[in-house]
Image (cartoon, rainbow over all chains, first blue to last red; front, side, top):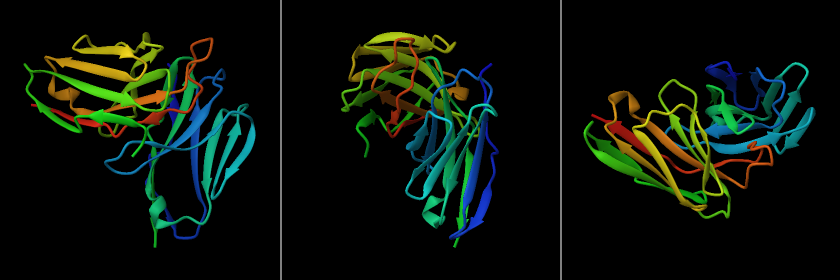
Length: 109
Length: 118
């Protein structure tokens, strides 16, 4: 059973703080890792993807991948109320694309 | 609005009805997917098509029947559904699957169809 786990939250952070979202996965053979943001009532939209160990930065977002620990995270710097959403971690397992349950983030003004 | 469209956006149907969901992608992608998203549950992959050929069927009940006439269009035919099938049905597309059939490309989602089965 391929699994992707996330803390369901809610994770509450004050505006301007760093939000840290974590994800673990069960299959060491996974090669591609994705973070999606989903606003209530909307479809998921891609934020970042990462394939290699280490950090990948894009604006206020940083994805971190540690394949040895089977761990991928997303950091959001200078969090804004508009970042309040559910963040989905997704991992590819061959043809299968497995999503975690999502972490609900609330950025408080 | 993304390059993936879905119709209808909302659908209410009885358990004896037959209906179809439609998805169209304008991104030139070759792989398309159907997902189910229920309340309080993770996204569940239902079907994968690559170059119009079905490559994955995640043990989905036969009351869900996919059809992919070409790389741009994907349908999900519904018949004799159950109330527990009520969910958001999302279509997605990606550039391709790799030689091993792995989905390593970014997937782009449509807005979804909110289905209610009475």
